[in-house]
Length: 84
Image (tube, rainbow, N blue to C red):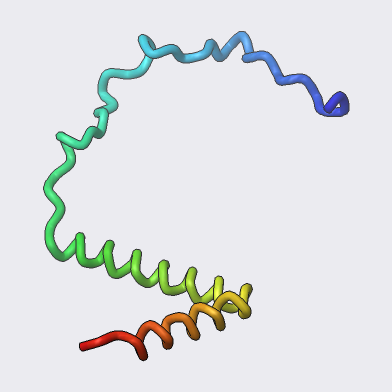
């Protein structure tokens, strides 16, 4: 990759910030400091995740129709042979 430019050196007026130069007023968010999640928020996040998952499955089925067909046939066979 000889045609790519060299990385630019940091400008002299902007010294790189190290860990000791981080402002103290910025709070660090940790798992212990996060407020408890309400049941409604958890359900909304879960519903969004399931919608995204279903959308991804539909996309995969459209992109790979042969695999989707074999998966449908395999599922139908499992359902036929299942004993209640």
